[in-house]
Amino acid sequence: MYWFLTGIINELIAVCSEGLFIVMDAYSYCQIQYNKAYNYVYPIFMDNEVVQIVTSFTQDENKIEFVKDGNIVHTSTREKSNEYTEEFDFCVDTTDIIHQVVHKNIPKNFESYQHSNVRFILTEFQFRGDSLKINFTTNNYNYAVVDRVIDHNFLLYFIRKHYFEEFFAAFSIGLDSIIDNYTLKIIDNNVNIIEMKPHESLIFSKDTYEITCSNNKKDM
Image 1 (spheres, rainbow, N blue to C red):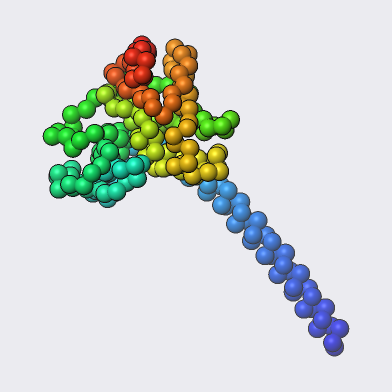
Image 2 (image 1 turned 90 degrees about the horizontal axis):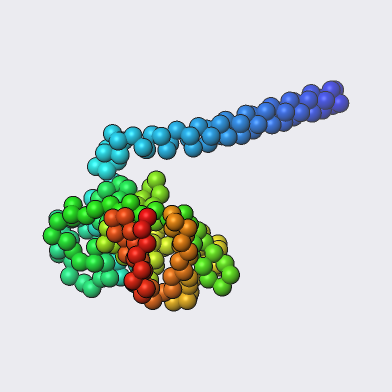
């Protein structure tokens, strides 16, 4: 009787184990297919204008980011932006889902800006032989706005907001430790190669850009 019961129990354990593996395989397969479907459908879904409008109403109303030393020190609505009286380097209007508009001062009209047509083949942050590819214009954001400046202070903010994990993986050091000793390599659409240092700035125009230290405009 003992051996009979033992045999039944062992068979039950084997059946349950096999069933568990089947369930786990099925779950893994479903998870893989879900991820594939999500990665395909989500970008299309988010590109829909109606979805973007609805999203803009459901997100945080504080669209104005006040930045000091590369850190967001305060957020506000457009209407209440004048109430912030502390010192800041610049503020960023993130009201538009895509276009991120940098202002040195609080503007009288937040809608008064113009998109730049300038695009780069490559933008790369470099330090001691290591590098990190970054982009000022993607499907998720666009900082290419006429008269806006890419400089030391902006890069601190930009990398912390959009490339913080990638930066640490590339350089294994804090951003503050190298921000005074970097090279920003740019290849423009005419295959001009520019290597910006921390004391240099890039200014967007409508169809050109300018590096402030050289005063050489590059036609795109």
